[in-house]
Image (cartoon, rainbow, N blue to C red; front, side, top):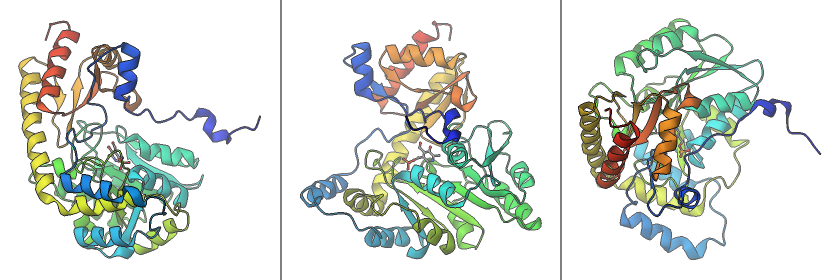
Length: 366
Ligand SMILES: Cc1ncc(COP(=O)(O)O)c(C=O)c1O
């Protein structure tokens, strides 16, 4: 038999949230809810569904490989030029493309110890090094990340807010990080991943797009999988300096986004009312969940996202017990947080169901 690349010998696949149908089948359950992948629990707005339906009979044709229309819509939405936009099958693919385009064995990336795991995977795939910087109270230590930057480092990844901690970094911290990087004339490119931006309400949160527009050495990632409710379609984009976009274009698979995902993204980006409505529903549910957890003496990390990192002790056991009761969450051992589970804020009834079963799982002690 042929062997895969040596580097893949120690490569574990990404563990995705388990699908509802699989858990129904395995546990012989009728009711299963998924609070595992930080999706929007509500369907996309009607006009997005209609856009998708309207295109169904046209899928005998390939999509526009250049993504002209969707890039024009994204340019309008973000206020940058179309030449500064990269599109991908989710931001996941863009992260991997960054690695494949730029990383070699001699290179390194900088991440936080509990950062979104796909950054590390992109580096490992290319056999590049990884500098993990300790967090402070579950928050990125941007000062230390900037201090760590050396000539080997190509990317410094910052999910803001972060998955799986749900925490964020403020404008002041980001300003200081860029000042420190510029002071040492670092060539590292900061990659700000704003998957959860629309769930933030902290006054001192700012989008990294502002820094891009000020000419900082930065890439900004945005996904349509969270508040826009298009996780199943796979569409994400990045705003990046032109020369980075051009380099990535050399290896981007020509049809990495679909005819339907491009059109759905265009329609979805226009509907700010929907985004605001969902953000407010999730925020209100998150407040209720937080209050219920507090009341039961269960600790969790304050979150600027649509999920909560909850300290349960032996997270893997609690994850399994919740699963056998029809609730899919995420165990956090792969993130180095074995005492925690990560739970997406769902609909009011899903959240009530989760809280009641969690209480049972924790043995009524809480
Ligand atoms: C921080 C972060 N970045 C990127 C992604 C991937 O999103 P996409 O669906 O666009 O690939 C996720 C998904 O959970 C995420 O949490």
